[in-house]
Image (tube, rainbow, N blue to C red):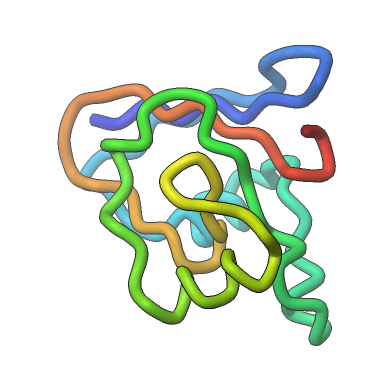
Length: 102
């Protein structure tokens, strides 16, 4: 079971246990995580996160995600798009923070 810790500049604000892996966007929606998703309002890139720990807990980014990250001048694996990131099945810790909080 993956443990996902959502942080702000003030520290951890939400911890989620994710059995079986899955979409980070779905986790954010279900748990009201502090990650903005204005990309759903035609502002792509607002869901960009900084991976503070556990980048290996995410599947590698697809070419489309890499293209957007390049346009934002952000590089994987330190930065990812929450709308595209998939958490692997299995044990581990993933600590993330919105780029609004970087």
